[in-house]
Length: 290
Length: 227
Image (cartoon, rainbow over all chains, first blue to last red; front, top):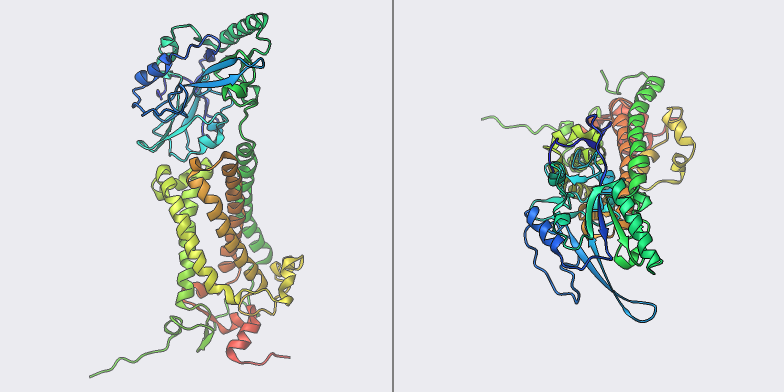
């Protein structure tokens, strides 16, 4: 996390407002076109290299996928999926998986440590390891199962959208490394426009289910993905992701009610005492013979 | 040569015997009982001070009492386990006295409010209906804390839906528990003078016992019920 260089839109476990500064920044977004991804994994390598992540031992699971899951030391994973088309042909789907940088981040909502997860004004959602307590609540709040626990640090870790590059005007490392141009970076508005153009093109080329994945349940994401065949679940994406209802109710209903109940109990004891006084044996006092 | 005379002061008696009269005082809780009670209370408060700052940042200042939020996250589950173990001792220790009698069922209904307004004093044995219900509530709470706390301790090993349910159970149990404990402390101190000594020195006065727990008083002293 880069301290203080960017204005903060939202911060975890803030008691009363956490927005800083007056500068308005454009919301940024990655653009991922799964239809032109060739699965070269240059983005994976670039991510590892730029973020100085340890090499994680890979294991063969019968696919080209580097690891079965994202890892605290592996923030960018190309997922490979094989399917059979309706007419019996093969379908080989690749999708770049990483933090989606939700506009409505479930991780941030669930996080109990002040400032451990921040959303910058440009929409990037970042973990601040110095404030993280490693409780794993963010993982409960994340609809994409992205934050991972690092045994080495005892903290959570995930894609930062290369905030340290973005704040000095560079594109994220994965975008920089992509040889086909299936990865782009820019303002959210621009990326959505680009996406819509591409989706229309795909649809007119026979991919009638092609869609732009920018789920409304989390108010859109900072990563928009073109799915050539539609069906987000074919690409290991949730169809309708949202901040878990349990996390919402917990934070916005149960917790405030609890604080009120605790205050009411203390206040109630005072009120009770002033109304009824102590319960004393006839003659008063604590019952001790004087 | 002088000999040391063994004096049977109330506190000396209260080390290992209860429900006995010593002069003007009656031993209500022997040392083992008090030790168990305070083990539960202290582990509860450590868990409280380490849990509340994680629960909501409004109580973030409590983290300083246990050495910061990171430490709170580490201490809390262990304090919770210690609390549960102390609660098991408490459950077993008190259980024989904690059966709600037929004539105490009033505590379950509207009559409880009348007791709490001091309008009625129950013809209570050693424990009145409210105390007995509180006993069952705290033990149920201890179980709820433990069962819901385990997935919260190791969240990444449990499915998300279970973690959500556990967070709810943990929160709701805590809210009820906190309200209960506030009431418990209030009743044990300001509301009923002479009660707190039962948990510090172990003894209460005869008048206290006769007033608050008349049936117990008669049983301990052998006095007949006044007509």
